Image (cartoon, rainbow, N blue to C red; front, side, top):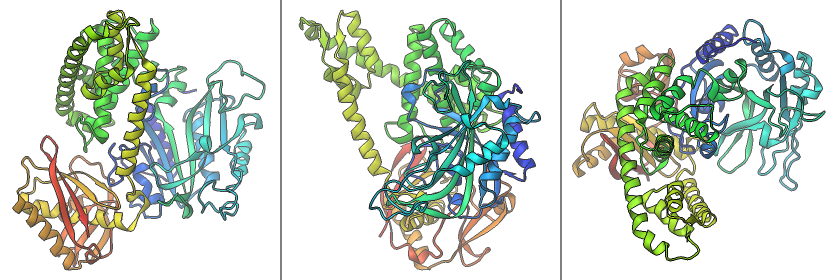
Length: 621
């Protein structure tokens, strides 16, 4: 088996698939453009959704890249041997070209060939989709997929047969249900389908005779999956067969490096070694000697790495109380809290961040370009959190005399939750202070209040992110086109510095962030509206051309600062011709065919988003 660093694995993967006719494309932002169904890019396929749904990619039908991703569902599990918030995903795609057989054979070759990873075949096992019976009364036919409820798709015997032909024995092929072997969509809508997953055996002896990948003994570690995109889940929850079959694969860099180097934890690899060393030095502690200390070190390592990538992104958000900014704030504050736990006084996260930037700047140069911003935001958020902790401790001290009157010496969970909800004071610190006073906290009561708070937040989030560009809905497409008109109008009214910093689109409205220091005046808002509506009234054609990025810029196309582009890009022009236009922008699409279909454009609100960034909320009537 070939021992590789993360950089070596990344390079080998790209070279392998380029040798198989794939074009290397650039990974995209951690903050997805025009997809309000998720806060972050959660998978390598996420930026490619329009192409998986049928659009033609400028680079062709076979693609390969590496993509930075964040998943927030397991934040509380971070601290064990394998969970991460930020991770890198290697991926290759077929957009209507090859399908199951070629995808599986290429995966097998990369895993087992001495030239590539050289993993012994006896260490590998796979899972495939066990199939589903269509929901009774749904009107579904077997394999149609165009139904609510259970999809009604047969067992994936084809993939199993391909694996067997390659030498994977039947006792290491497991048929698993939807929860294990169905992938997507990345948000609430989009392309999806059954997958086959590849596992590496990290155990010594099987837990039982029929121990297979997916077994609850956790001796099998998933390292790669091939997703066979056959369906699109629409906004109504229906599964429609895609017009062309696609393949989306994903290999996690951290997990694969772990098994290639004979490790059992992602944190024991060279990826995390310098970060952990920096934490040890800052906190004057040692990794690998105490379980609780190790957990705190892992949390700090993961959370600082995640925060660096969010803050270093070309579309970076700052810590806040909403959306992606709230996740970022939570990551930073949890890291600060565990730093205090390790050293008492805490540590400077910006010093740990420097190590992260240095380790990843080769693959992600934007981190070094934005290093000053990263460190400044971390320092500001640490300072704010320390103020929060002081306020919380002060409030606790005020409550303490009455609390001590309770002969049971139990602090109400509801009161503990009030400290958390009002002052952002962590429950762990409330328990710590209570313990110092000889008291306990009713944790069950706190957890119940916290659960209600989470359910409310999820409900509000679900309403906020309803709809979106992922389902290619008519109104979402209209709003996406309107952002191009708005972007150019802002440049005309405010100046060329008014550059897009992000957008969020639903079927009901658009939200557009742009660089500008001061609030817009009522006159500037009215002029911006008038310019957009005048271009709508002209019923201008919208057309797309594929060209080189430098040619696009030479023609006056807007390209977002810091964004990574392929050699060939899509350029959307709104105007009468390539030389007579209102706006020209590098964009993945989709767009309406003429501006006259948009309706009346109205700005509902203009406000601050973050330092130096303004936000417009607008609707089409």
